[in-house]
Length: 439
Image 1 (cartoon, rainbow, N blue to C red):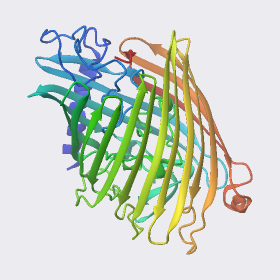
Image 2: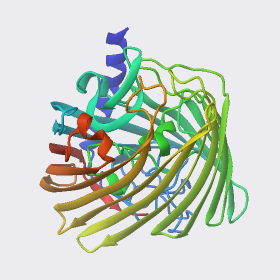
Image 3: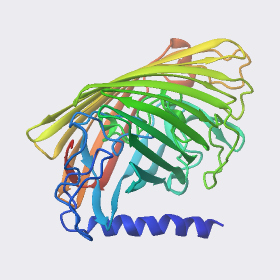
Image 4: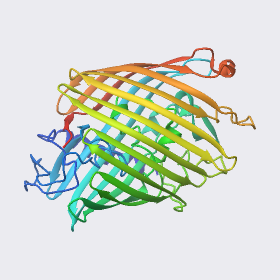
């Protein structure tokens, strides 16, 4: 079975590398879903969207699920077309030495990675977009997962996963998105798949431009965007001028620790999200959802809500992306509430240089799962890092980077975590070359 799954990953990887060798692959992507273009079979079209929506409308190619990022975000992807199909691919590979500090910390070599393929085609009055996202982290993460102080969520060998970030599933997304214009300023969308993302939360950190250089997951991941891989999702909604309104029915159970399969279930949970894109540099969203038994070891249901504000500003020789995110979950079984607050930013300057930071405060009640009182602690994590591109061309960007993480916590945690734990990462980052700003 695993050999079949490895072959399933290997075939898209070959396509991914083939796209990297396409001539002129760095042309502007068709960020909008309109497919008007010059027909040049087998070649990348200079203008794949000659009569598309306004330039401030965000792209479904650069976000996650049916979510939006600002229209001006740079696109690191390869693209070409074959007949009437547009083919796109993007991804990232981090080769990292990860050292977590304090008594609960450890040092490991690891690799965070993903590959996303997209195929787009005109279908009737609308446009159809297929997406497949794969990750090999189940093979490249140390056991029981990526070491990360104060992180929690999901399980390993039937036990709660603490101070580690779980690897992503092999089939992180298998979805389709269909959009149909209804009028000049209104379009209808339908999105879903066996592995997809409901209309709940911000753009997941894997795809956020403000987090693009950071190899680590936020500590607030499970309060903000952890539903990005849900095994069974159906979403519908409308884009009305600069606003998007959408609702989802989905399987609320988070993936189990078997990362190689798709665990389909009843669409027992729901959510809705309202988004706005006032300009090509700004996107705001608010979402609310009900999840039935999301955690494998927790019998209770949850209500989650959150809001985010994303800003992106193209620069002459770089880019500046910033996100401000709030996420909250209420556990209905014991009526407890955890909040999370995150501010992250990445500055690309003088083409090859990147400086990034992430500052977050998050409530954690899972650090001591054997304590029957499940005490909650307010944890702060403060990340400062940088990357320098060693190779930067139309095909690839290879960067060398490092970061350091400081923490704040209640003194009662000192016996377990030390007085002042400090963590750091050293890494190489590989991804497709830059295809341009916005659309």
